Image (cartoon, rainbow over all chains, first blue to last red; front, side, top):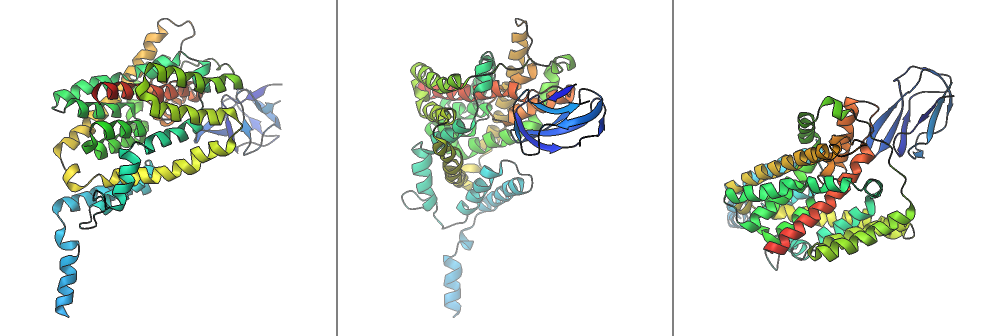
Length: 70
Length: 372
């Protein structure tokens, strides 16, 4: 099952999707905040969101799984 | 009754106002506007602007040596070199040298972006500034406020207001000045380069870094000691993980306190008689020139390194070799993601960015050693 990983360390600023949503390649899924800058994270695959592993305000490291797409 | 009224008018500041004061009020109001409305470095610009305003109200004597309130702040804080090193303590407690440790090559980019300083040093001499003034103007190219203030207060205190304001102005204007340069000097293909993941850095390495760098840099360039010692101690506080209270005090409370006195004192050096000098315009111009050349040399240095590297670096990160932390790194990230939206250069750019801070301090120390 494809996983979307955090490309940089930061805090989860906004989650733009919910479990069950259908997403397309390149959709904006999550906005991370690092060094007071908002960085949008784009989807690598198309599919349905089966799991969201983070919540708004969480601190994530580079490589952490953010979202699982089924 | 009329006599009392007349007396009040004559002893007021109103009759002593000069045209210069009025112009300085306009300067202050402009900076206040930029701070409040545009939020350009408001933490500094707001106290600076207010300092300019109050010192240009006649007969207040706030900057009168041995008497004025702000003179004491200025004398003890800046003339005696207390405040800039304390700012560096807080900076050290905030910055993460991890990206630099993970990718030490980026140290070269931090050094490459100091070229603007040396070019501007000679340019300023051509414009008729003396050696000490030229050095104080050149350091603006590092885009590092505290270092600029530190060097200018020692070499050319009469220029302090102008060099400090231009250093902070260009730091705030990074997102406007740098992107056109970046696009001019790199190809679309280069901007799209995705850099490989940074290797993880252990806690031990992060703790050793400030200790080893402090020893190495200060043994090689002893004149850098006041700034480097504080910077590295702050960083050691942070990375040790055992003195969270000291880390927080350095990066929050103490930093905020000294920022107030720094801004106010810098603003108060800008009386009409010192600031309204045609040379101030040259300082702003030369400072911009220094900053532009530094950005360009950082970018070109990165392209030069790519000639030898198997794993190409994205040359944009060279622009982060100027020490405006983290504005320059943010700017690199933004331009990189415009070229390729899966390009996350932020952390890669932090390496040269923190190296730039060290580079600017070392450059300042060398200038100080030879001219001070």
